[in-house]
Length: 132
Image (tube, rainbow, N blue to C red):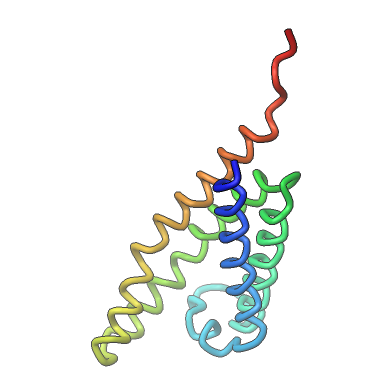
């Protein structure tokens, strides 16, 4: 149980850090916003940063961890098009940068898995125990 809580806290910290970065250094995130989306890239950058912060807070609290972790899995899936755009836009950059951009693509799967694992663990921790 302690490992599960530690894993959840680490996931929350990862999301909180990413969410804060959207506000502190928004320009790189603006460049990842697919052009097809309505509105300005900055609006999407701030909205996704706020979503990451909200999800991080939900995961950090045991009472809302399950819902927050499920939201995190959805969020990780929702930002995948931005990672595809980044990989496409960076295809002519130097090899280390290309590797970074391409490496983000398969990295989404373990993040989604981590979030789903956290949600399952939170369900077990909050499930009512049977009374004899």
